[in-house]
Length: 357
Image 1 (cartoon, rainbow, N blue to C red):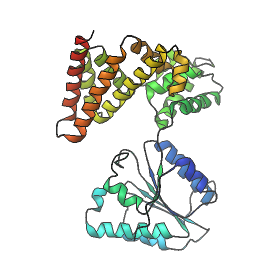
Image 2 (cartoon, helix red, strand yellow; image 1 turned 120 degrees about the horizontal axis):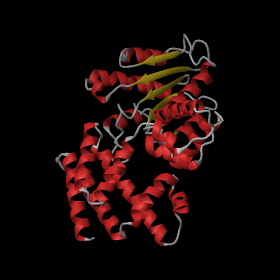
Image 3 (cartoon, rainbow, N blue to C red; image 1 turned 90 degrees about the horizontal axis):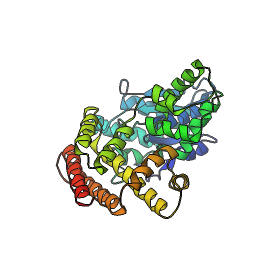
Image 4 (cartoon, rainbow, N blue to C red; image 1 turned 45 degrees about the vertical axis):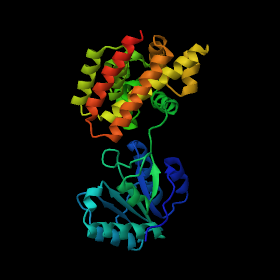
């Protein structure tokens, strides 16, 4: 029988819970894979020392070697060399469990994991292979797994904390990186920490090759790749400027890159909400830097959005946010093609802007 559904905890709460390690089943989910990797690595070192591995008390199951019976046996077998065993379960999908026998085997194993007194079971998912269905209605897969495992959420870090993290990685290599440059890097590359590490490493190598000790915006423009968030910002700008040709061009590029239309709309809506919030602060006499701090937006994107917001009326921004909400509702409640709904958003926003210039 499944245990009572546990409340979701954060990665930080999981780390505190593991001092000392606590047996049970834990579901790692969320967008930030780097933080999942960090927490799992720290746990393995606590259990097995610096090697992070054990020949007898460490079991790993993936798509390639998964077997429900073998998983149950690993969970039920006694710890051989220490107080705890660690079982890692990767990349299973709900589709893999369509047969009743397969699902029953998995549930038996997870039930054993939830009640074990010597086994820590980590169900490790990635955003690419696991849809939790949250914050709306939990998916069937999320409901099944969280019936036995404590969900541990790993979301992208907020921009202000990420700026400090990026800055620390540069200063550890004796490179000066101002908040504005770090914020610009995040805005250009995105919030994914694994991606940021790769770009930071390239920037550090480049700056050292130039025999310098300071990061500049020009370095980021020269070295780093664009992120989908840049495309979303270009798309949002084209819509609000009523430049329909440009908006369609950017949208077609995003579609060619297989970007999720729901994600595009979410990012665009967030940009407009930032613009409106910044405008309200600016109209009240609050400076951009202070407004960005209050809103938790890094300074470089805040300045870009504030510059655009100054050219728009409050009513225009509210109207376009309303059109975005209508498109979001249509995506979730109709069978219409999501990209066609984005194209409709372009046309409706342009018509509104032309009527209200």
